[in-house]
Amino acid sequence: MNYYFLGIAGAGMSALASVLASEGHTVSGSDDGVFAPISDYLDSLMVNYHLGFDPALIPEDIDVAIVGGSAKLALATNPELAEILRRGLPRHSFPEFLGRHAASRQRVVIAGSFGKSTVTALAAVLMREAGADPGYFIGAAPLDLATTGHGGADPIFLIEGDEYIVGDADRRSKFALYAPDALMITSLVHDHLNVFPTMAEYEAPFAELIAGLAPDAPLVCAHAFEPLRRLTEGRGVVWYGRDPCPGYFARDVEIGEATRFDLITPAAYAIPLETELLGAHNIENIVGAAALLIELGAIDEAAPEAADAGWTRRPSPPGSRPMRASARATRRRARRSTPSPCISPPVRWWWCSSPTPSAGATPRPWSGTTRCSPASPG
Image 1 (tube, one colour):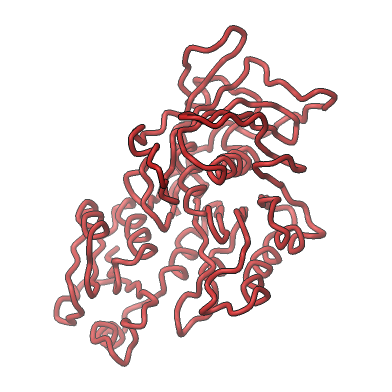
Image 2: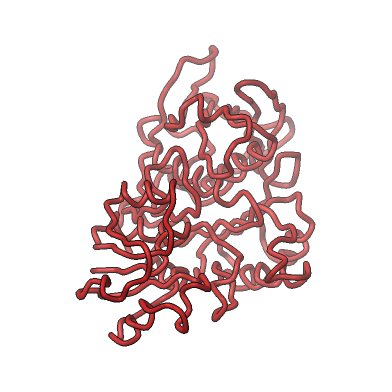
């Protein structure tokens, strides 16, 4: 099909354009001022776009128009939108279209005030390193992925869920249009005061998102945030955090040029991990990504065979079987003093030959698969 993006330079718009381009669709569009790095990114996708809004430049063979939420795209002031309406073209906001487009997939939404870009990128990288081909939509540019959006061939579609409103004409949060089959919330602190003046107003769309999740659907949340503990009261939650909590957490953290720690699972497995990312927040992000993928069955906490899970064997201490997800971020970029929130870092997974439960704990057998099975894109 042929898609036209009115306002293509937005983070979400360009990510959706990436998804459609990866699936073989024709993508074109326009925007009023496209600057680096997004101009370079769109050029790398071979997307045909023009600057300014000229109705004469809209291709004649458009099937669907995707319209951004910026005020400059309002009908009263934008001649291209007027032309789209004159032609009677089907038109959608990008969140509306993304939710429909991924409807046949297992939609895994990663939301939160912060951390959602990093965790979505981490999850996508680790699944790909394990041999899977998930779909993903990320509102930032990861170092370890060539694009911010990808259709994928496996059932899982990872979606960064933004709580900000769709636009002036549609005051719903973007993630309200994604109908998740699994949900992760990385954080919950008051943000976007221009549209959510009070904390209660900010919490409301998160509460609705949680309430709309099926009772047996996976829900993974950061334990450190009181609002999340309150909003999820009465339903099953998989918790995670940097500090000890009733779920997944980090233990024996050693900060250095490469930070090392043990990932403790609800089954009390202790899995040594290593990362070159800086900051305690990134330890929590890695724990969260691991928790999400283990709960989805996309990776196995019980030391899968390397050939089955796509891990790479590396030299290790006697008695252990180390495996590493060989993410492609360079050491120089991963060690920057102020890491970008959209970095998806190299993370080394050191699986013991027999994962070791903590003292006095009873291991919980894991029944999930080590990778996703193939399926046609949605």
